[in-house]
Length: 263
Length: 302
Image (tube, rainbow over all chains, first blue to last red; front, side, top):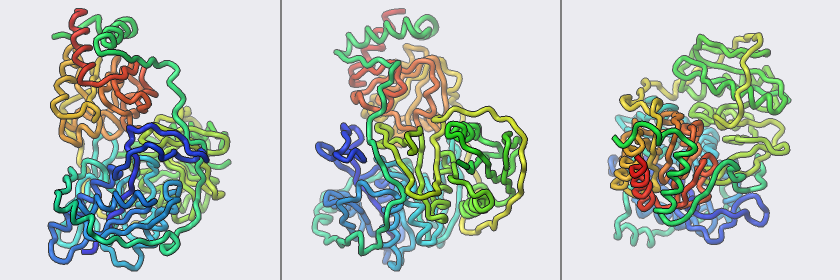
């Protein structure tokens, strides 16, 4: 089986986000980078499937991004992917989902992938469009937000998360694209030998133009923080002083300290 | 402006947030029609056209895409609007691709012809503007006030071809047993607590307050607490008198499940965390130091 997994490198969300000069996205200065969490479960599931199949199954990890995206590809390789492909695009962070999907589908078309795993969304843009758009371009079935995957006799059974803790179970055949939710699996930590090996693996580097990248469908402006919560209070200080103040506030603004509790 | 709203049936019922789609249309001063697939007893009430289809299973994405496209064909709207739900985010890009149009996901506000969406796990905002005449939108549940549902419908039956690619095997109902909805106080653990061991600090505070322990999704995914304690759109929606969010950054799906709480205390080392947008008090502190101090202070008051 020929498997493709798409990964994006995103900043650590604990970082401090400041608008870039154009104001359309964030300035990358000072941010720490890692693999999008949704994609880490996609990589893990792809590698588990490959391992369970053995033999000729192969996993290709694809990332679209500037030079730094190579780290995310190396991480995927260290987790057990066989081949790495980098669509080297310095403009990628500001591309819209339509453009990213055009590149993924452009790369995948004609390369005979049976199954494509992606994250359900990225943590930074959070549009949840790219996987489905790529599948529609390729004319293959897709299921979004899977939390369970089972391969049996040529077909897949997946669970898809709905609202309120409900899930549905669906069965489909290859070729297909699945977008993955955290909770699908617990991604492994790469072993040292695999990390070393991943560094020696030669990556395929492609240009956006060579995979048919298209014009955007939306523009993005005015990247900004939320307006501060006017009603909210931010308290700082050492733990004891802070606890005493919070306790006073709870006593005066809620009724929960007046009854029950401390049982 | 003319909007085609996409109603949603979940488990045989019209979802409550359907009224928010009409609220969104009202905010834009737009004329609204709706397309609705699935069997429901309670049709929405509004003055306008309801494109109605039965048959096909709830998770046949291609069937639902075709129905929406059939309604678009007849209605010729300027935009199609879904809820940003498991149904909406699944179907919307299929419709956008078919029409080769822009899509804006998770709209939370309007901004001078553009749509405001959240970014960076809800920490930041940006304004997204479609570059095509027609647009597909998904709106974040809870972001727009519900419009009153009243009026007389013109029901128009539509049909589409079901698709065999995805076979529906059934639904799995959530584990029950812990009903957080009745709790007066909920103290929830988020990933920021750091480890499974720290859950004890959360339990101790919940006990001092006579409350229940809740959890954010990453904590449940990591197995630190049972899934039945998950608060958020994929877990339980709660509105206690006091909600304490410990080490919870405040992803949109978590906020959707707790923002109607009476009073929200957030404990987080990141003062820019999105939980601050719904917190009455944000204590900028490390959970490991602050929770024992608060637990002791509360016990001392009694």
